[in-house]
Image (tube, rainbow, N blue to C red; front, side):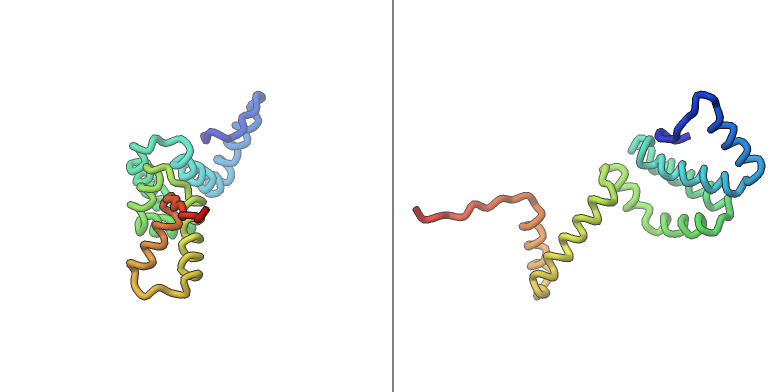
Length: 137
């Protein structure tokens, strides 16, 4: 069960999940797989991320739910990058923000002649270096 799953004191939530498991097993399995994947970022120790994701991929592939089997293929393709993001604690939103800034730098430069010039501009803009310009007094 996930960390932010609401648990009712009366147990209505647990009984609802049990009913779902009994009568709509495939729907319950989809929900369970989703929660287990979300746990990768929420509750799993980064040192255990690799084994957790491998176990999750095996379980998702065995489920034979088409959406999850497609997702397993994509995860396997980008497995090392996903593990690195979990171990470094970099959320996807931060990576998307950095990618957007890099695209803006590239667009603002109207194309760079070589990759070194683009890399230098990215490091200058995103590297946290502050350059103080000399001012005449």
